[in-house]
Image (cartoon, rainbow, N blue to C red; front, side, top):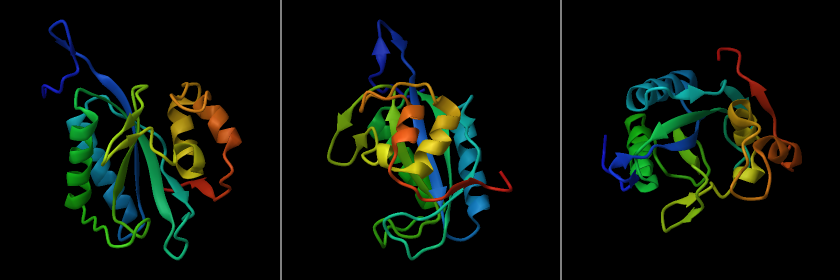
Length: 174
């Protein structure tokens, strides 16, 4: 395991992290399956929500997405985890041409333990977490009763309160 600074009195501490996985280009099922396989290798014991077919938000003129959430235990720092996620996105052909536009694979760090982090390249909890049904539905499947570090809400309460009404439906091949 990497030495990440998550140590206390000689033992490495593991962080519970929730990641959002998604994509809407090419063979969406294949890309998500590949990302899951890579995560199972890197993070033994990873748990996944079901796969959801989701309507695009913000940039609407693009294909629907497949999305899911993963819960991992890691000793990687948030910044190291972001680097790992970006390298996996690149491995699956991710290109950043249009902000919020079509992509083969997108991995976002939603929550990192109960920390609140603001940096130049990473903000945790994810800034759109409380605004996105396509993230809250699969997150609630894994951790509905978990208290969020922002908003004084559980994940389930955040889902009930979200204003986003975009379609999120369980994907047939999940």
